[in-house]
Amino acid sequence: MAQNALLHVDHLSIDFGDRPAVDRISFEIAPGETLGLVGESGSGKSATSLALLRLLPPSAAVTGKIAFGGYDLLALSEPEMRRRRGREIAMIFQEPMTALNPVMPVGAQIAEAVQAHHPELSRAEVRNRVLESMHEVALPEPERRLRDYPHQFSGGQRQRILIAMAIVNRPRLLIADEPTTALDVTVQAQILALLNRLRRTHNLSMLFISHDLAVVSQVADRVAVMQHGEIVEQGGAAQIFGAPQHPYTRRLLASVPTMRTDRTKPLLTLA
Image (cartoon, rainbow, N blue to C red; front, side, top):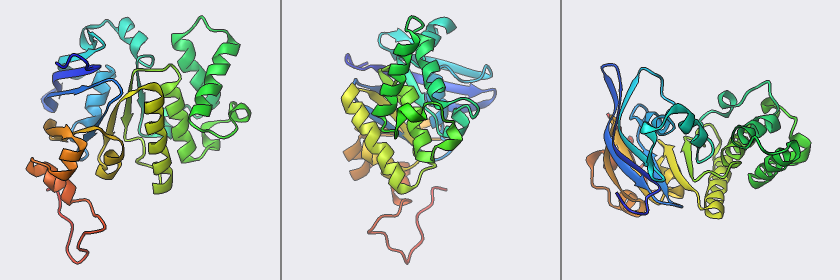
């Protein structure tokens, strides 16, 4: 284990009955570093992220070690884990409309995240933190829109609300699970730029999960490639994208069209 690693995952396995989802994977994330976790659907990426936060259902058997800031997350009691979840480790989920409560104003939802970990704050202090967070993610007119509901915002704005909820308590590690999947290319670029800026401003470590290699190439310092629950290759982003070693990584890269792709030939498939 690297001495400066903030997160160290060692031989993590996740089984759902007789169905293994993740098989003895290991990786590290240093302070201020972004690790891109890539792979096709069903490779075990999201199960890994939920295991880090201990949000998997009781039917999941999780073994291995998840060391974060000097303690093993898997060994903590649920109250101890609850104190760290959302405060030291936060997550941006895939679908804003399912992650947000449709019948609660967005300001109240962000405020809940603050109050859960800082019950000592006054209502005015909580409101100030909420507005600061909304300003940080460049939501328009947050003072006026505190009482608006999720359906009154665009898709990109809803994603910014989720990011505001995730960063409001100044976590050390941010898990972003496919945060740009449902967005068009222009809004996607804005969200990626926002995440990069927040990472630099707050020295955030980030686990960025995606099947989109082009997106990962814009945010990741290092990349881990998953296939069938295993990490088949990991290394610096330049090495993974420029000189991949594993056949699956090469197929994954070859399946993505680029400006140099021969359009007279079909794209390589992963099957």
